Figure 1: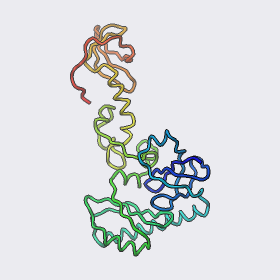
Figure 2: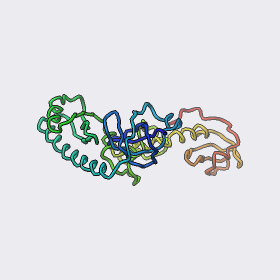
Figure 3: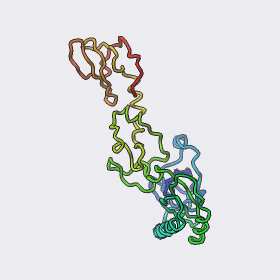
Figure 4: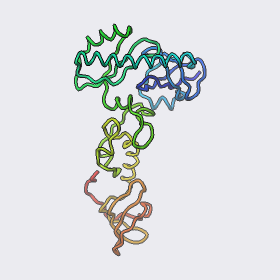
Length: 274
């Protein structure tokens, strides 16, 4: 039987799991992971091509397809986790700990409760864990996260109108920089290029490689070129459409496709502003 990639938990962790039966994409299953028994979603078969794109994924094994009884139990556990989150918040406030509670996750098999929190520095939560152990009657694991992980847990939809990427298909948060926004000529207004986490949108990373490749293959601004209509100087690049704004010898300013450049007479040696 093939192995499968299965997504589990509120952090949507990807596992490579063994199975004794065949499963289809989208099927919900009960699986054993390093954390215990969890409910997960089958994404695809874990063939060599898929495994080559994953970095040391945790292992596990699919126990069975999710039954109606399992689904009812999962709903009961989620409701209980909401109550536990309220109680956890009460204790944190009572103890005046410098931390912000983000979410509480109770594992399907009851092996542990995971408390996700934000904090600027290290927090001594030993007394908190002791009290929560008594309250919840199971192992309590504290997990400090960042603002991107907070969005992954709590955010719903992005400005594009679709579910946020970090809560759907992203398994790793890609590095994003202002240079990527500048190269793509996106607005530099932080309010418009920031995601629900307050950081630069992950989607700025998606097409950056294409923009870079197009930029390298096209004459830069200030370069003298020869086109089908004569000699011209490049004024600006339109990287996504592979077009150039050029100033012709007769004074015209026109847009041409990069394929219309017959030769480059002189290259602009100045550094790119990107």
